[in-house]
Image 1 (spheres, helix red, strand yellow):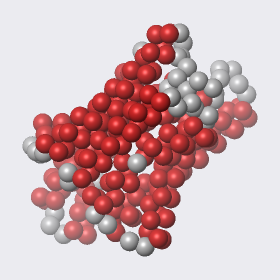
Image 2 (spheres, helix red, strand yellow):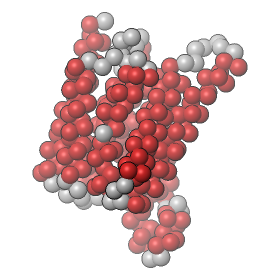
Image 3 (cartoon, rainbow over the protein chains, first blue to last red):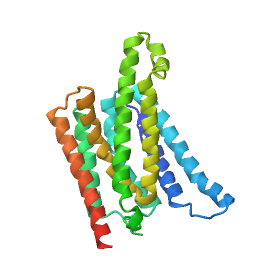
Image 4 (cartoon, one colour):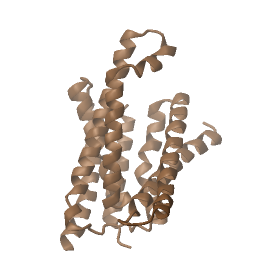
Length: 117
Length: 138
């Protein structure tokens, strides 16, 4: 595996986490009775989120066509970990020790599922 | 900023149902897409046309519809729950998908895979419990 390929895998995870963060940002806004301009501004993060998730989808498909699923699955399993970091940095969501424990259990479980393929 | 600020009472029941519905529709989508792909592979031997003809299959369209519905539930959940909790709770789909594969597609679950699924379930329960605790405290 080349560093270039590893970079693409990390980029795909970056797209996925970024897309979800934009979607969450879009869902946080949107109060009742706001102006049309404000609504259009609020639609921007939603469009960015959908766009990043679309990029993630096609990049992931491309990666899947190059290597076996069992090879890529562990990187996908690290998604919850990347998401925890992304949400705590970008959205300032506080991570408690209990939440980290849950995230690590999910990542560990998914890695075992991936290894069983 | 507290990540697990409980929403207003009216919305408090939504996260659980929303997460479960989202995971169930994703599961249905995965199963239907698999059935559609298998269905079209039986009909068309030429691999270059298989993907195109796959769109003709009713199973594929049903799978796409389920995926869109799951996305709508996901947006509703995101409106109420913090991202890190919602994203991890919806990992329950990793339990539903193998179970559905076993029930509807006749796929086998190895002991190692079952152990992995059990650990994922434990992780989801730990995160759900931490959300419930803060909700009860409020």
